[in-house]
Image (spheres, rainbow, N blue to C red):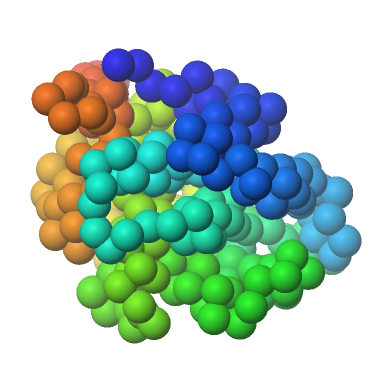
Length: 286
């Protein structure tokens, strides 16, 4: 089993094809118009073609990451459906999960006139801004308030300081949406073929956010790109993986058929090994 082409391509067209293939395989082809509409609108917004907003100007949390997370979310939905897992996840919940994935980083977009820095300055609050974008956008698609609440509850859990266990959900189904989205958010970025290449960009985003929020140096977890890379293996093994197992109900298991290797997790292990190697080289050259 290999990573989906769309994970590697980070292309709206490849993403649309993947999403529609997944939904069709589940008998949900009627979801295609909604998926195409939201994907097109989010792409337009990230490219600077949305009223009141500037184009995304970040190099780590870019459109490519949003597309990768959405592809991963769709694969989780498909795997869960084939496994017959509870709570029973119907077509509408699947649609809302994909919508949440497409919108989860819209909070990095800057408003017209906001020319200082990049959207990275909103890292520590971007999930709140993403919910603001979602609440303004989703009514035009016919979503009812309860559905928008579920989308925003899932998005809220993707914040760097938020936890699924601390969030209030309307239903068990809404909680499962959050588990799928959080898993897709972390797994998709850490399994990406260019993950190791982009960590310098991630560090730059953190620096901008810390400076914008006035976080003093002694409270910052990373003080150099090399330090971030050195801490990345522990970030995966001691924070992300345990969180995905416990808080997110280990839904990552739905990314591989029973008894077969999980291509997503294997790609992460390979990336972690590469990051460790580069970090050690950085120590030598610093």
